[in-house]
Image (tube, rainbow, N blue to C red; front, side):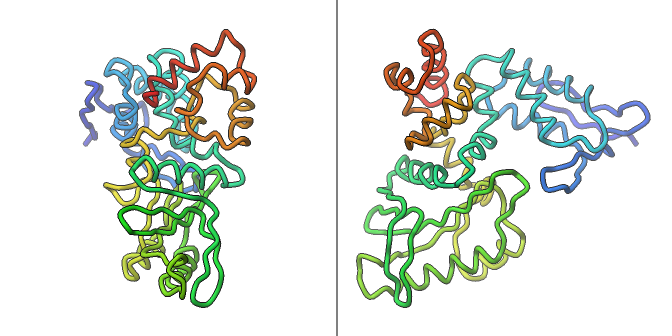
Length: 294
């Protein structure tokens, strides 16, 4: 029996010549394979704000290009290129948020700054690289956030590509660190909670351990309701690496100066200081305005 699923755009997934669509396996970044799901692609396009016409256009193109074993990165690239050429600003930028967070690397330090900005946007006071003394040992906390008398320590685990997963060793380490800080002799070094945050995913063992121990985890799509992506979107705290109107070298110069959010590039003077040509400045400002609400 041929598998079909009706998509919001009106396109129906159809069997391809010689190979049912439901059996076409694509390859994820970590090397695992899964059946291509056009509904999943359409959902991500809809989340980015793509019109129904554009979603149909992208799906039609991808399904025409689809081959067994195709990398998910290649599928993303096909979709992104079409959105960047043909859709209105800032749809392509929204679609590229996950890759934009990877582009904060390679050191991981801009990711810590980005996390601090996310927590600030949600009403917390946040500092990066804070030295605290636990009951048994000193610790440097990636991000220390405070709100309504509560203090949380955030451990940032940054991966440069989608294949990286945060495993149980990291969860064990973070749990032990924040147990030590909970019982610190000095009140100024105590925290109420520790959170392990990653820009990719957690292994099953890491999730199992955290659920048993009470350690809080935030991953790209974990937990389902309050994950990194939803925290970014709710507060419209997009990394400047989302901006398709900036070159890679311009983004790197800004990151080196600790400019990590697209809303921080909202002045012509700043953009010119970082080498953006005057004729391109209005395009950058317009994209930043529509994406981040500056």
